[in-house]
Length: 260
Image 1 (tube, helix red, strand yellow):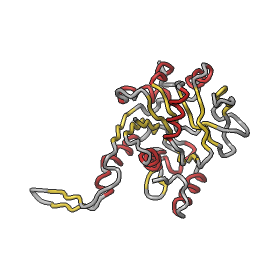
Image 2: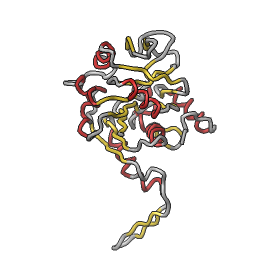
Image 3: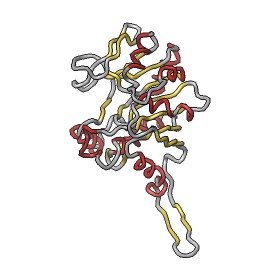
Image 4: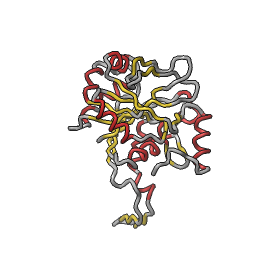
């Protein structure tokens, strides 16, 4: 089952780090936050990734193009008959990574629409953002999605206070979806979606539409959006303060999202 990751935003609130690289390439420790997100899925058996590139997407392409060189010890023979010998291995050798240019200014619904052709015969796929980490049990969210049979499942998290909230019924159906309004308590969209391919029927002519706006509101209004509650760790990296927090947790060996 494929994992689609939105990697194209400009990260303007983290300008200290994103002026020269896309937000998913901002590091936690010595690896980009994107790598940490991918490791979370891979640890649960999901190793086919589709990355929706946009702003400075070439930086992400360079990272994966040079992955073998960066992760292994290597001997080079120079001269007229050059040769390369890699001495070690890395844990990501069984990953598949599709790097899809979805446009620098395309909004999230358009980015999702543009990678439909890479899903193959998969009727269900994961979707998440390239700028937040958590110890989310994605296999449990997938099982919940299959059980309820609706079009979409999002992971509902308990947020830092500056986010808005979801309204949930007792059966976990999302009755209202309001992305980042001004208030209060409850749960918010933490990403880590499970989606049916039927979602593409809501994304026509969508380059300048946020997936979190009209498409998800319509899906919720039709009773097709469900919430998988996650009470564990979840933290976005939207600000320099959050960048510092995540790096401190990683460097101190206290990173709850490290499940591999």
